[in-house]
Structure formats: structure tokens, C-alpha cells
Image 1 (tube, rainbow, N blue to C red):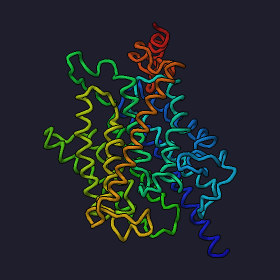
Image 2: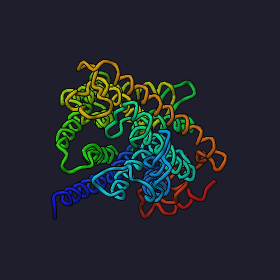
Image 3: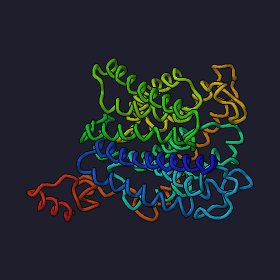
Image 4: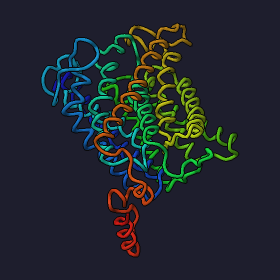
Length: 431
């Protein structure tokens, strides 16, 4: 075996393994969201995650991958590569197109999972399936094409988003915000006088395990985006990923102790995730100290945005917008501030961070791209919800929501005991 073939083999193994790590994050999403919602809706969370994986993979295979990475002439949408066939010669990688599809498929599944948490406990299951098709087949692929395809207009402009703070997290976060506003808050979340009523999580240890799985998978998310097992930046990417997550969690512990007089567990969980989201865009281009700053800022801002959102009576049960939308914005803009000249060589248009003498060029490009992607996610999600509502109710009935989606929609509780069987059967068939 010659060196070239060995390199291809190593890169293939690396990309497949990191794709599997990213797919494992769906287990993290499932546990995190199931732990944050009430017991009566845990099964509905799991079912939505299966929709993410099953429908997301199929739609991305038939449609999404071609729109995202196919050849085009205008920098807006791909037109080749359906079923991973046709002209994909412009994708010049050391791995096969099938291997590359697998890695990108794991990404698209993560995007729709962000929206899942924001509409937890009240979205109609049929409506969620339809929205999953729209997100994985249209909304995300186009945004990804603009930045990552090699011919997209934002990529040509010089936008840098290494592993997706904007393309995945800001897009998913603003889409989640639109869906949460459109569908409305859970029954009883807000009183008529505007008071916020706390809906306690059902299982914080479960949510914590979910967060740890997400943290683990993020090393595949970020380091895997090198697409090469021999890339010298893998170690640096892993370190910045770790430090930003740790800083986000630490900042949340200290900030909530100061603000609430107690360290708030759900906030701390989300603080670490906020740090992971924020470092995703610049993990290959910023220093260790910058990563700590990015994570700490995102963790604190996440707390403030969560409070602000509840003050506006927007119900986001898992904090999807504060964690993914806002932290994705912070991370995207942070590239324009902290990108090191020596790490940006040969990337984009030769821009680098404002704090290192690079001027406002990169920061400006990052801001433009961020606004376009965020508005795209919000507006198209809102439009999709309007269309879906003409096909099927977007929200479950009042009775189904009060009983719980597990029994009301799926016909089975998450936690059953022998003496509960008749009661659940009565509830399922009651009107």
C-alpha cells in the first residue's frame, strides 16, 4: 500500500468515526430534552429524535445533499449530486463522496434536533415530521451551500464558520425561536398577569448525562471537520473545544451563584453547551485564552437571554434559542475578533481578527453572513409553519397536552407500573 492509499484509508476511518460520534449526540439530545421536560412527555421527545434521524437521513440523501453541495452557477443552490450521483467532481477531498455524505448527514440531523427542544410538549407529531422534511431538505442545505460549498456567495465573500456556529447553531436557534413563537407557550407556563410559572424538569441527572454525551460528541463535531486524520490542527481544535465548554460551565456556576444565590443546575448544563456552540465556528482559528473568553461570555449571555425570553412570554423548554441561537451568534462574531493571523493562512480572503490588527473586514463579513443565515432560518420556518398548518394542526389539542403527549399521541407512558395500566388506558381513550 502506498502513502496516498494509506492516507485515504486513515482519512476515511477518521471521518466515519467522527460522524458516528456526532450521531451519538442524538442520544445526548434525547436524554437532555427528556430530562428537561415533564415525565408525561419523555416518549414524545424520543420519537422526535427518531424522526430527526430517520427522515433527516433519507431527505438529505434524496434532496438535501445535492442542494447543499451540488454544482451551481450563481452561488445560491446546488443542482447536481442527487442520491450522491451525478457531477460532484468539484468536491475535491481525500475521501469518497459517500463518506463525505455520511459526515454531513450527521450535521443535518443535529440541526433539526435543535428545533425539537424548543417546541417540546405541545407540537403535533405529524406537523413535526413535515417540518423535519423542510429543514433537512431545504432550509439547512441552502444555508450550508452559501458558506461551505466552495461556490456559495457567503463563502466567496470570506465568511468563516469552521464547524457551524452560524450554519448549524444560529440557523437552528433562530428557526427554533420562530417555531416556539408560532406554536405558543405550554398551557400554564405564563399566568394572565404575565407571571412566569416554573415547570420543573423531570430528571436533571438524565439531562446531565445527555449534556455529557453532547460534550463528548462535540469533539467529533469540531475536530472531525478537518476531514483528515493527519491534519495537524486536530489537537488544537480539541483543546479549544474543551476549554470553551469548561469556561461556559464555570461562568454559569459563578454567575448564577451571584445572581440567584445558588448555582442553578439547568443553567450550568446549558452554560457548558453554550460554550461548545460558541467555539464551533472558530475552534481551529483562535487561541486557548480566546476560547476561554468566548465560552465564558456565551455562558453568561445565555443566562440573561433565557431570562429575557421568558419576560417576553416565549416558551422554550430546553433553552434552544439561548444556547444555540445566541451562542452561535457570539461564536460567529468572535472569529472576526480573535482569529489569529498564523492560523488563518490560506483561509478565506486572508482576513484575520480585529484584536490582532486585522481590521473590521472579517468581523463585517461574519456579521453580514450571520444576519442572512439567522433571518433565513426564522422567516422560512415561520412560512413553513403557516403552510403546514393548512395540512395538519401544528399544535396538539388541549386534552392531549394536559394528559401528556406520551399517552395522548403515542399511546404509551415513559414510565409504567402494573397498577397504572388501566388508568393510562382510560386517559388515552378519554375526551
